[in-house]
Length: 256
Length: 66
Image (cartoon, rainbow over all chains, first blue to last red; front, side, top):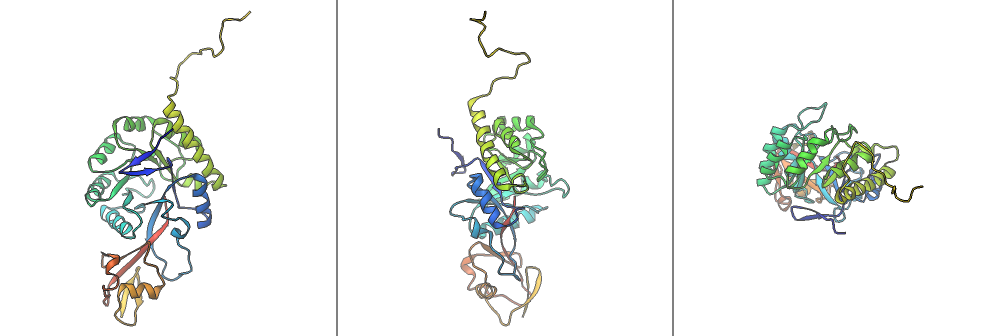
């Protein structure tokens, strides 16, 4: 069955997208990504280590020819910083996509949606393919589409919290009302959370901490891969409605 | 000549281009971006863009992130 995710003319082979943060080392990062089957990975933009040039480079472990690189603006609390990091990321030369984060608060890491909207508009005009990391607010999602986002990335729960999909009803409204791809980003704690996001109809799920922070990240990457596939197939196949009372699976006829 | 490099004072012995600075620092051009006094410098200009005393230079690359 052909079930290709296409965003802004780019075809994505996997519906599981993974982050590259919080791993023990780059070798573990590379092995987890491989096990996850993801073909898109997020990265952050930071200063080069000038002092220690022996320090390995992430891109030596994640080949940009093999993986689509989605740079983020994690850590940016203002529109200006988010623009600056986005532009630097594009100049680095591996991608014109940006997972746009304008963070509002360091305890929740919830997005500052006013800033996010402003930055999305500016970057979209500059030709970026903007993937804004948003709250699960259907109205903000709509505004981000109007501002030129190529996809919207509503959170399931706070970044790194592992709380799962806390507001499936809001996500459902977003999925029903937004006509561009929706990638659930942040909050997934374990495989069933990823499956729930996909069963709701999300186009993809972006997961980092749940994999990197697991006792066995490689095995969890495989679990997430299978959960995303299972959730997607369940969504496409059309689940049965929930009913209060039983309906027998075995026939009455022929009983004695 | 002293420049500000990634937030720290850094001495370069003579006026040099960004390209020369990257070579001196053993940093490959691919996968990095360079900003001088908040202006992004295109890779194509690395060999002609000369650094001046007091310039604030940022050299960034990609690290693990979510």
